[in-house]
Length: 325
Image (cartoon, one colour):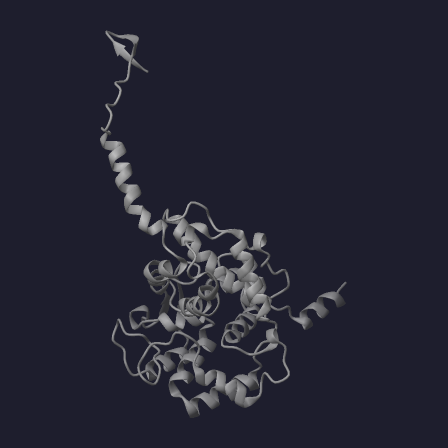
């Protein structure tokens, strides 16, 4: 029964009963939606990855989708590939983590691989394919509390040796590496950079890792580098490999260079030089010359906490300050 109004007075009206075998348009529509959604609900992890998530990852992650694909093919699919998304439980998460531990992978690798599974399931949850969101990293025991900050910076003589090696062996790798040293930009930002993002005075890094864009001025050295590049069609990538294909990861010649020069021999994992070490080095150098706000603007950080991750204190300044006490 429901309330109705008759001549301005509230009255009770009986809701008409539905006859057997008949449904309202609303219930019919709901039934159709349920029937349409059923095949997706029945999807396995393998089929959902292939038919839905992989294309999404390729469209939204210029570099990391390669890593996610490796995580899926090598570690996730063999264990849970034929499992229906809707039936993946905390027990299945335990199986994945146990399998990764038995492979003697590092804690960080286990965190990244389980993170890929979490993103796939979250993707399905947001689209109504499964009803429950995936468990947190803490719930499955993959949180890492140790400091993952790289502390080593590339010294001036190391920088010179790296650039000389690359210039002699791979001009394309030399250009993209020198660009990184002159801007401190993220590797992914160099990979995506197109000529339309460059004017006579500024470079705009569009749609960066944190979802925003930023503009930096062009120094004289940087201008000379850009002028040395051959192709300048607006929609073309600025930096290409020898075969004229885009970069999706750091140049292989850079890794060969570091190995050949022996810069990482006997070093702990977080003390080794990687392509990201260039950004870390630039941030450290700029931290001694810029105020915090300007440093955040150039490096593309939204919060001071990110700057602190890359900044190193100046020991001489510390000593001078203490001497004044």
